[in-house]
Image (cartoon, rainbow, N blue to C red; front, side, top):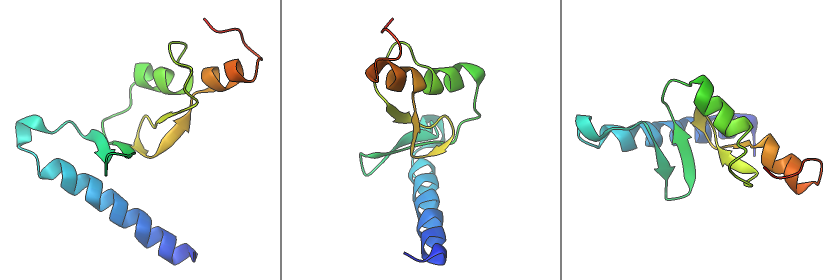
Length: 90
C-alpha cells in the first residue's frame, strides 16, 4: 500500500474514532473504546499510572495491550519478558 494511501486510511480511522465519541451524549463520552469491537483507541490525556499499566503491567500476561494514547496496541514488556522466560511471573 502506498504511503499516501496509508496516511488517508489512518486519518479515516482517527475520524471514525472521534465520531464514535461525538455520537454519544456528552456525559457518556469516555474518549476510549474499541472500533468495530476490535481496534482500541484512547484519546484521554496520558497519565504515568496508565503508561505504567501499559508498558509494565505485572498483573497481566498479555503482550499486546491498548495504547496509552492513540489507536492500536502497545507491548507490555513485563508480559513479553515473562513469556520469553527472562522474568519470573509476579
